[in-house]
Length: 157
Image (tube, rainbow, N blue to C red):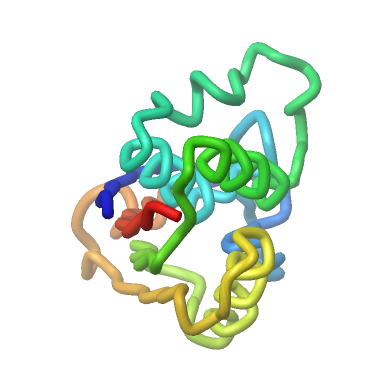
């Protein structure tokens, strides 16, 4: 078994949808980024990359490549899972923490879990989504953006 850790952060940007865990939260601002800027999924991709020693999300899916412009991060997650499988690893479980002052994440957490589980071809019970605020501290606490942390356990098959 191998453990991976990932982190991602994006600033808020007007005129974009806010997508986390593959769910459009319907917030008045989205996150700036080359893809759909799904920080939760990006953190998980980095965790998987770390566990399997695949580098990082920027190595696999560079933001200089136009084919990733606006792409769903769930598609990038599927590709990462297939790559890990090629090295003989599949996800055992993962735990993602979303740090955001707003919007509220809990109403969307189950759909996020299901989306991520489907992309990884595992049960939703293998995917945990939690949320917290920074109570006004830091960039996410001031409402300037969102950051996410992820850990995962990859099992040899």
